[in-house]
Amino acid sequence: MSDAPIIVWFRKDLRLADNPALWFAGQSGRPVIPLYIYDTENQHKWHPGAASQWWLHHSLKSLATDLHKKNTDLVLRQGDPEKILKDIVKETGACQIAWNRQYEPWAVPRDKSIKSTLEDMDIEVRTFKGSLLFEPWEIKTKTSGSYYKVYTPFMKACREREDTIRPAYDVPSIQTAKSLPKSEKLDDFKLLPDRDWDEEFYDVWTPGEAGAEKSLKAFISDHLTDYKDGRNYPAHEDEAVSRMSPHLHWGEISPYQIWSRVKEERKSEGRKTYLDEIIWREFCYNLLYNVNNFTDQPMHEKFSGFKWSTSENRLERWQKGQTGYPIVDAGMRQLWRTGWMHNRVRMIVGSFLVKDLLIDWRKGEKWFWDCLVDADLANNSGGWQWVAGCGADAQPFFRIFNPITQSEKFDKKGRYIREYVPELADLPDKHIHAPWDAPEDVLKEAGITLGKDYPEPIVDHKQAREEALARYNEIK
Ligand code: FAD
Image (cartoon, rainbow, N blue to C red; front, side, top):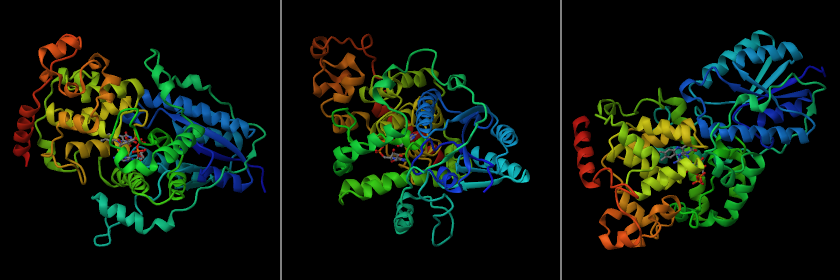
C-alpha cells in the first residue's frame, strides 16, 4: 500500500458518521486529508445567506473538533475549489479524492469539471450518494420514464424501493496523515455577522453532528407519535416538529440515519407522516435536478405573465413583520430572530406575500434564502413554487390562505403571536388574530393604539383576494 494520501472533500456532509466518502477513505487505509473549501467562485446568486453563514461557521468548528478527537485536523481553504484541489494534490502527492455528491445547478458542472481535471492528473476521483436516499435520476415514472412532477406517485415509487435504503455507516477509523497542508483560520472566512442580530440563535440552535443527534433523539421520544397533527401548531409550547432541517441541509446527519432510527420506532401515523416529509425533501431535490431553472422560473409558464406588484413598501413591511396581520408578523419575526420558521407559518406568510400583497414569489424566496439557517435550494424553491401555485403539484393559485382563520385554527390561544409580537400580548385570545376588529375599549385595555403601537392591516384580505383572483384570471 502506497503512503500517498486520500483527500476527503467535505461539502454539505459535515459529519463523521454515515459519511460514505469518509468511510471509503477509512477503508482505503491511506492517510486522510480532511478538507473543507469555502467556495467563493461558483455559487453566485445562491451564495449562502447571512443566517446560513452563521450556521456554517459553527458547524465547521464542530466538525474540526470532532476530527481533532480522531487525531487529525480539518484543513480550511477559501477560493476556487478547482484551483485549490489542484494545488493540494501537487503539494501532498495525494492519489485519490473522495466526496459526496451535490445536486445544485451550480455544483453539478463545477464537480464535473473538477473530476475531469483531476483525472487528467491521474488522480482517482470517487463520488458517493451521501445526502439523499435516492439519486434524482433514480426514481422515474413507469410510463414515460421521465422524472416525477407530482409528489404522491413519487412518494409511492420511493416507498416501493424502501428495502434498497441502505443502513447507516458508523464513524470509520481513519489513518491520520503525518502532515497536513496549511489551513486558513475559520475566522478568515468571516462568516459571523458584524452586528449582533444572532444573539437568540445561540439559545435556539446547536450546530454540528452532536446537536443533530440530540435533536433527533428528543424529537423521537417526545413528538414522533403525535407528529401527524402536532406538526401544524407553531407555538413553542405546542411545537411537535423535529427542527432537523438545518442539520440535514449541512449534512450533520444523513437521511439514512434519520430513516433507520425512525423505522426502529413502533408503527404510528406520526412515523409514517414524518418519513413522508423526508420524502418531500427527496421530491424537491428531484425537481431541483431535473427541472431547468427551477430556482428562478415558474414551472407553469403561464405565471411568467403574472402582473406582480413592485411596491417596495409592501415587501419591506412583510420582511420586517409589520403587516398588521399578527400571524404573518409573528412568523416573519420568528424568522428574523431565530433563523427558522415553522412550516405551517411558512405557508401562511408565503401565501400572504404572493396572494395578498401580490409580490413575486422570487422576492420571498430570496429573503428566506438570506434569513433561514436551513436555507436549502431544493426545499426553498420547492416551497415557494408550491405556495405561489406555479410549481409541480402546487397548491392551486385560487386556493388562498385566510391568515385569520389559519391563525384561529393553528394558534388558537395566540401563544405563538404573543411570543413574537409582544405588543399584542395583552389582547384577549378572541381578538388577537384580528386586532382591527377588536372594540375600542378592548384595545385600550390592552394598551394598543392601532397605527401607533401596532400597524393597521396593510391590505384588506377580502379585497386583496379578489384582486389576486382577477390577476390570475388574466393568465389562466
Ligand atoms: P419537520 O416537519 O420535522 O420535517 C422533517 C424534515 O422533512 C425537514 O427537516 C425537511 O428536511 C423535510 N421536510 C419537511 N417538510 C418539507 C417540505 N414541505 N418540503 C421539503 N422538505 C420538507 N425546508 C428547508 O429545509 N429549507 C428551506 O429553505 C425551506 N424553505 C421553505 C420555504 C417555503 C415557502 C415553504 C412553504 C417551505 C420551506 N421548507 C424549507 C420546507 C419546510 O418548511 C421545512 O423543511 C420545515 O419547516 C423544517 O422544519 P423541521 O425540520 O422541524 O421539519
